[in-house]
Image (cartoon, rainbow over all chains, first blue to last red; front, side, top):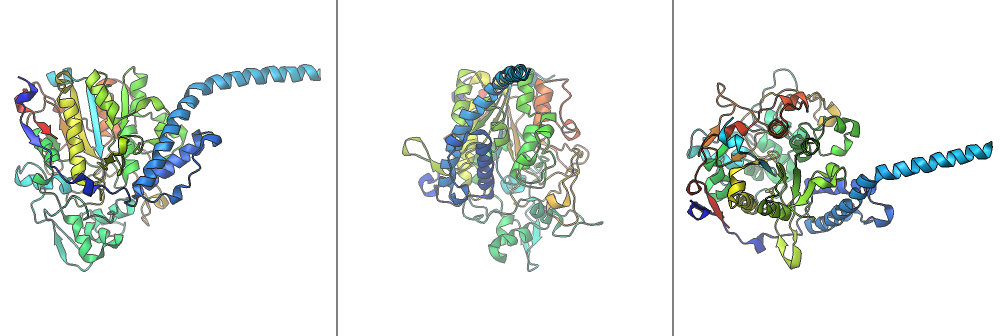
Length: 109
Length: 411
């Protein structure tokens, strides 16, 4: 018995070109997604690499999707770096701080 | 343990957007009276007091251009008919038309909220509902919007939120109750959240910044199916917007959120199903759950039942309903949910509240509860709400249906 024996059901066709409308105003769901991404961008992405896009000016699905794509890429890029290197950085900083402190202490002595 | 459960290696969840059970599947009751859909005489009053009866007049796009209210105060009106909180108020599902009228539809336009799809208009969803298992009693977790409801699928709780802002949740709270992805990773299992593509991205942004390794695109889902690398648990998000595709193409939103084209979503459901269906080993070892996050403000006739409180309280200011704080002790409005596996007998109907003697009530906390039970047996994780949630893999039986008994969708 193989897949060729499976009963088939047709997916209904429709005019996808006619249905497409990237100028549709964004829903409250996508507005929320923009707010969350904007918040995350400020939280995770270094200021030099941020998009500096004012999300209040994004009104259509196309405009929103362009921003969403950019920030998703940035979050993948910088989110990973933060997740993976933060503990190491902290360790180095701690050591540096510790040696600086000891230098200071020694200097004070 | 059944043979189906014994062979199960993968659970895949596809969560669509904002459609109620009756709106999508209510018409199936005429084909099978066991399905707790519509008799055809269910009604709501409009703002002029005129009675509006359900009708199979839903269309794919254009009828719900004004997004129906599905936030907490709107859902409260829909469930209680607009009666203010207080002793003696009764949940009667009589406020849908009144609520839709608040969205600027005009009285006549508000009647559209009572429309449902004739089953032949959405053949993929209705075929899967009748070929595998349909849940009469799967409810959204909160009578409210998307983000807090989706949180129940990922955490088994929304941490006291009834709105769209999961960023208000503190890390301390979140760390007490790990996501299902973190639980599986900690247990040595695989878990992935597949969003459609980068321009659509995910609604799980809180987690996206927390751990990138859980995220991939839908193209990767297809590749993982083919290469035999599908993790134990996959959660799929549809495309949330119309946007240009690679190479100048056009990609339609396929989430079925009003007013996106419903057939684009029906096609997407078929493509997820087919990805699994065409690979024999994967097909035999996978359970696919298709479920909607919330009702989207659309009419459903079943009163949401009480549930185990999850230990959080949303204050009056958060619910937006004067005089009402919410203890997460009542479920949201009913949504379509279908479980697919070749180990499920054709035409399985899981009874809901219409059959008090045999009822099984599911909600989105059932997802992490089920996955935790299946892959992390013995782990004591989650809120009381999640621990008390029904799980669904017992629907997989002993008999493997042959290929000539399991449909394939021609795209």
